[in-house]
Length: 519
Image (cartoon, rainbow, N blue to C red; front, side, top):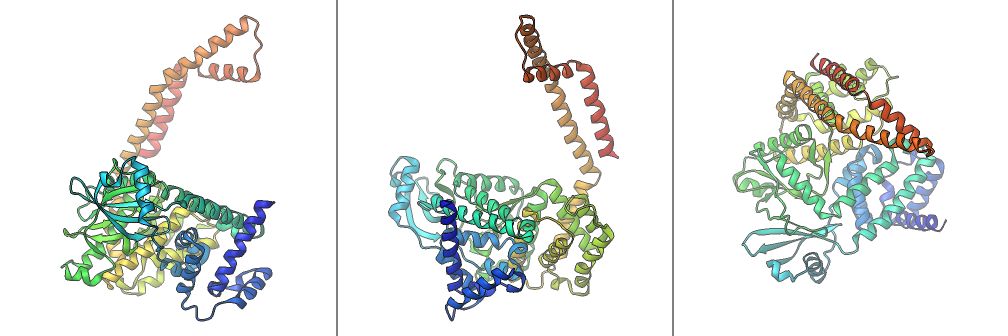
């Protein structure tokens, strides 16, 4: 009861700040129940006049609420299905900039992490060069002469986030209790996804691991790279990695002055992102211009691995086939992919769904290639899926929103970029490899390796079961009572005693699997 009152009080404060800064003006009251509409009208009575644009209003409100809500706003920018495209676009412009914390506190965190004086680790250590909601960054030089970026977690940030997340969970649960639409959009799932993301961001060793994996995936890409972390100096509260000397992608004139080929860079941005998403299943989910540089060799460099996205093989196939379906205007195949993936319930009709998708795809074929937005097509597609009871897929929405950002960045470099022509070779190449004969052989090989691994451990498993059975039988001969769990154990052991029968079953299953994969 006390915690509920506490969460209600925090929610009331959030509502007051949003109302005062004019953010409630962004809400469409027509889609709300009567009570909510009344509260919106009441809240607008205290709205501060001259609040500026909608993006400015949101930024002011969230910044005033503190780091947790700035991060929450950035996260909601990846969920246009929850907040709508207009608010998502305004939130995309939200800059994660907070006042820096004092150098004395930064020094104390570094020294606590390494048990020594800061001067014993770094020859030079700058004032903060950037400060965000969770951490701030310093430029430093090591004794061996290397320049590094040092990211340091904000003091007390974990407790602050935990308090705010508890209030957000309470609000999401209340919404789902009262709204079927909130349940469909999984409000509680949105908060839990944010909580997991923030938990990972607040252990900088995990960000270092993400950067390391990202660097390993892209080591053979000639036009893209990632700064690798220094594992000896990285700790939970501190990440140390290579300092990037380059031109930010936001500095278009600087890129032009440095002699970089802007249209080629635009193609690299799109193709790199699609390679990471479709080829690797691991992509940078915060690719705004502030996190992208071009080095002296003309390579695209992505920094800050705090927010990464993952796609399983099923999701990667889904994405690749959808993009190819729109490229080739095969709308029935796009519809069929949704059903095969289990994303659209089987009680719907594939032909009806294909018709709805055609309404998304056909208008783009009346336009020039440089007028077609791949991100807009996916956005409209996800809107259509709501009509067919497709549950929200967080990883796909994050991918779609990142694509919106990536496409926007690419078009600032080349307004006439042919998005679909740029994507085509990456998508076709992946589908040809993974869904053609080579891919089928590789999948069969993975199945065979899994089968061999299971067969290799089978004798050991059977042996353990027989030993347990022997012990239980011995106990029974001495008059010890067997409880239900012991009887169940005997049953399981007996079921495993026929080794050759079990091996034969495994082989038959393997042959069937191979026949399916090969056929």
